[in-house]
Length: 113
Length: 111
View 1 (cartoon, rainbow over the protein chains, first blue to last red):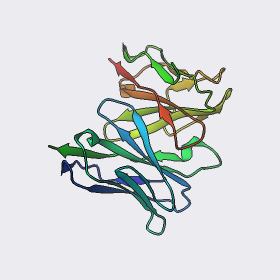
View 2 (view 1 turned 180 degrees about the vertical axis):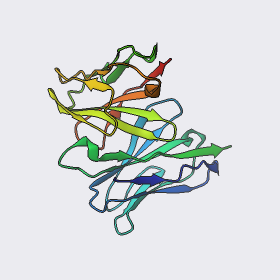
View 3 (view 1 turned 60 degrees about the horizontal axis):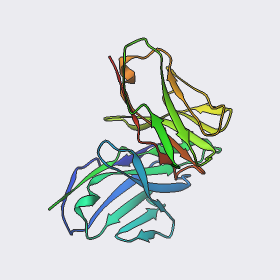
View 4 (view 1 turned 30 degrees about the horizontal axis):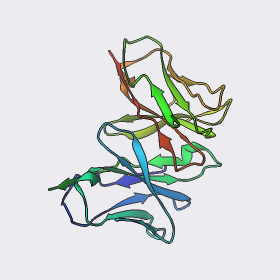
């Protein structure tokens, strides 16, 4: 079974701080990677894709480490509105089937005032 | 409005009844998915479809039936609801695998 592991948290972080969390995956043949954000009792929403060279979107930076098989998400200058659960998603692209798309169980982040 | 819509938002049904959850998307995305989300399990894929008239099982298909006669619709039917199917159900769609857009979910309670 292809596994995607995340620390469930919660991560309690003061407003304005920088926080980072990782997601490890078991299959070295993984092709593409994503971070999603899910607010309480809401649907998951795509936050950003994760590229091999790393990518940044405002206060958010995503990194991929293929050698150690993990992806990371860093949030700078955290806001109260960043409080959510962050899900990592790994796609193994098993012949084009969606069964290769695996969600982690999420990391719960709480930004405290 | 463009997007992906699910109905109903909330449903309570009795054990043994058949219930259908509806999903409609206006983007003409080729891929559509049904997930269930439960505490301790995260999101689990029930069924997916790569195009109209093509469906495939996911991780937890037992007790569910899907169809996709039109690109925009992907209903999920629980043939004979059981308490273990109490969950939050998300429909989703995408152009390619990974960057998928979710509907707002259906909270189903089986009593």
